[in-house]
Amino acid sequence: MSEKKWSGRFNEPVSELVKQYTASIDFDKSLAKYDIQGSLAHAQMLQQVGILSSEDLSAIQAGMNEILQEIAENKINWSVDLEDVHMNVEHLLTLKIGDAGKRLHTGRSRNDQVATDIRLWLRDAIDFIVDLIKDLQTALLNLADEHADVVMPGFTHMQVAQPISFGHHMLAYVEMLGRDSERMQDCRHRVNRMPLGAAALAGTTFPIKREVTAKLLGFESICQNSLDAVSDRDFAIEFTAASSILMMHLSRLSEELIYWISPRFAFIDIADRFCTGSSIMPQKKNPDVPELVRGKTGRIVGHLMGLITLMKSQPLAYNKDNQEDKEPLFDTVKTVIDTLRIYADMMRGVTVKPENMRAAVMQGFATATDLADYLVKKGLPFRDSHEVVAKAVRMAEEQGQDLSDLPLDVLQSFSKLITEDVYHVLTPEGSLNARNHIGGTAPEQVRAQVERWRNILQQI
Image (cartoon, rainbow, N blue to C red; front, side):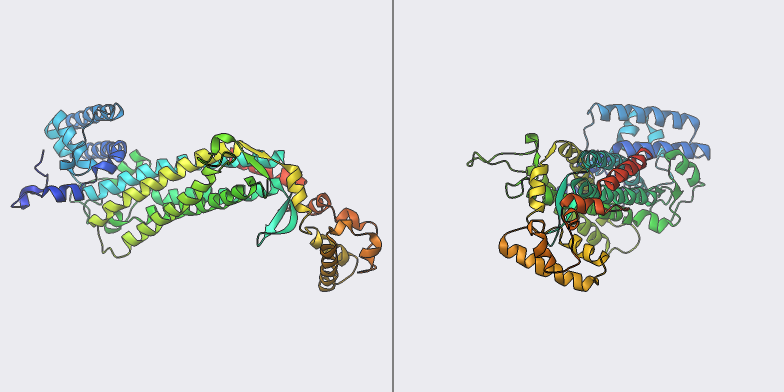
């Protein structure tokens, strides 16, 4: 087993240190199912073009099915001596079926083989991630629908800006996740191109039919340049970039959940099963899940930087550097999947505290812009109305009151255009309902957007 398939050119064996340093089996064994999937399609194509006999193909299919079963039952002893998943599978197959196993590698190289395996694996991962994004969007839509009428402060610069609906706030993240899903699905098209048949870098002298293999494996298209096919990893970089954006969105929401659960805000509560306590302070309820999401976001962005750096100085075609693409890619997929799973569950365990949100709206003159708009509608130029309202806010602040608490005669001292109807404008609910247009925060619009998104998700 220690003799390498390529050892004939060398005068001495590889040192044990080099074996350990260059082996990838510890992590690329997770590609085994996809390696076998690609090999079976390759074998079927070879038989169709007359390179493999029907007997060899039958033997390969039977042997590979046995190996798949052994993998499922965790019976494989993966060997570092055999370097990677490809050589391990080929060795196991040859032990089972003899020379037919040795003929399987005709017309291909490990270079195009591994590129194919990764694409098959990542294609499935993307499909699963898109489903998980949809599940999280559904959890957020349910919150938005239930709390369309709940008033909360909207912030800019972390200062109270204008009243918004809590449902409207949740819908902002539904939109972000929608774009994340689009990016994943768009990335999938570039992942779903077949490198197999490019061989080591120049193609093969055998009369292969790559279109046959591509159809068997469900690829949308075929990589058209053999050099690019074996050395391209920009699809993995693109996926990790899309994952970084997705995690960034979840990190932003996590930041808000962490604020909102604190007694300073007390806008929401998160179910106890997603929180931990303190070993010294018995009163603590720590939002560990959203905090970890923030931390793991940095990890995924780090993987993106690592992959870009990995590729930036590589000449064509394949280089051993590319062995380092798998661990960051595998970890990115696992982290994104784990995060989406727990996040959807966590958002289903969020309890909203409407009274605290409304009280917060009343602390920051959130309806000041509504008063300015009111005066504009009465004929005052906006810049003049802005100045009028700013003076009214300053007086209310000095007196420790909200704008809606100022008597009518006091408000009229700033502008005679103000009449009794102003108090409807100055309520948070009036502010929400006034923004009744596409994209606005009015409860009617929130419910319309919830319905729109439910229809969209049904089609994914």
